[in-house]
Image 1: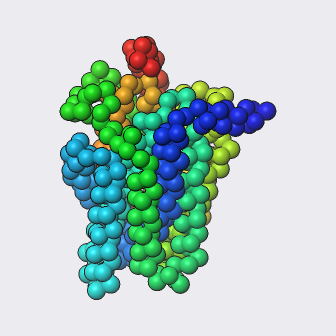
Image 2 (image 1 turned 60 degrees about the vertical axis):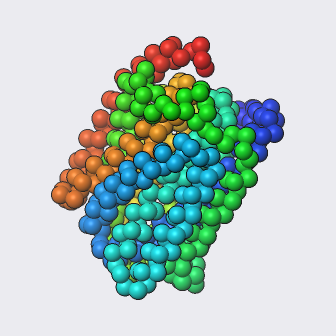
Length: 421
């Protein structure tokens, strides 16, 4: 009955949207589909090439360089999006990405191994910018009520893209030219994503016309809610610490047990299909029902507790073997991409428009990757698997405790902004 009511509500909400909003939502979701379809190809190729060239213990170095590159790129991105349409921004990122990947792959083929760093670093940068652009666009055309219902199906479409991309990567990479060939195919589908996003129309072209605060800086826009945004940022920092500690442990064991570059590409393709499979399961069967019957607060507390139990069992009984650590990483990433991502988006809706975009810029564009940079720098110097496991446990416990003041602040923000929501 609850499932029937959900789909009835979803149908009703979609029918009530204006034709321009329907068009923007549908084409924006298709754009996300192709973006996530291409990403397992790009990511598997970049990681396999890097691990084969430099090894797992160099991965914190490239993670750290990625945050430096992202910080610089975001500064340029922010200036560019102020005076240009969201469609021009999206095409700009997609075109630059295609050029960088083609150049990097050419020089890698010529034996210039340093381009493994460039390829890896840019795959970390472009996905943040492009996903942020699509989600910011969709956020701008949906109300809180509609967003709460639509995020599950929209995310499911992206997960299906990721599953299909991962399956093609694992099953066909050798036929399609190995890591380099599959990366070129992924690059082509990034441009397909750009084409669909272009068709969303120009009615909602200038996101920064909202609230007539075009020239207001992101930091200034969140001054009134700085405590709330700080606590959201702290949750994101701890989340990224946990994800990347698990990722590092997985990389060490992947290098130990999977030896050739082609085997790594295939294994990683299957891995990202599994991650997207977990994400799809949650988006189709869990998120639509859970968000309508359970408070967002409860979901946020559940996630770190679930992570603590999974990692504790995995590392206690199989921490030196690949499968249990791989399973932990898959559950962490699958939940992060789906349940946590949707629950995190709900944290922004008590904010008014200018606060929302300022908070998303600061937290999702800067803090998100800064956290990865910090934990990467730590892992450059401390690479013991025991250190990784203890550090993960501490971060998960801290995450739970940060949620208590976060939801107290949320109540204050809701009261402060209630006349605008």
